[in-house]
Amino acid sequence: MVLQNFGSWWKGLASQLGQRRAKEERPLKRSHLQVKSDLYALAQVLQWLEDEIYSLLPRDRWWQYQTALAEGFTNAVRHAHHDLPPTTEIEIEVTVFPSYVEIKIWDYGPPFDLEAKLKSRYENPNGNPLDEGGRGLIFMHQLTNELLYTRIGDNRNCLIMRKNFR
Image (cartoon, rainbow, N blue to C red; front, side, top):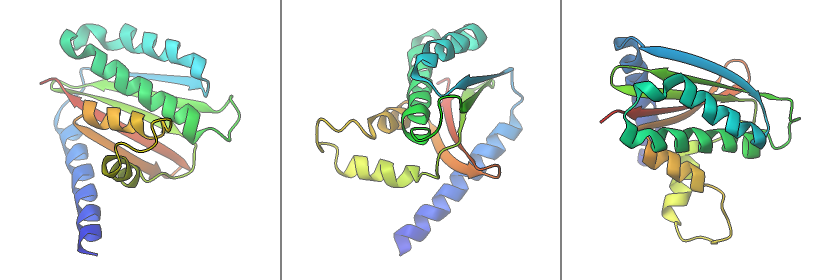
């Protein structure tokens, strides 16, 4: 019970800190993209990321931003939208701040408990080697400084990834 309360408290605090941090810094650039829920759109998504913000990011970490976005997008298609028509939109926004990048991905899937899934994957890292479920979450968690997934008011979910420049 204490651990559950602590987890809820920590999640709330982390979310508040992330919101406060975003309010303290003015964005250098913000870009938005909507694509269909189709794995073939991944090439378009990655090209968009490169076209929009490549010149603003540290070169030695570029692959980390690409990988985090690719994992987030493919998870939305494969998991959140697996029962929805391929015409269902996935919305993506990337914002470059002076000290970090924030990537948001909105989906229309059912609510999902990111913390529980991460905990499960970390507690059983050597599970069935054929079971790929959850590995993308581990990549996103390890490649970013903040990883949040929340249900928002319009029956969508928002994955928020923040990655510091340093």
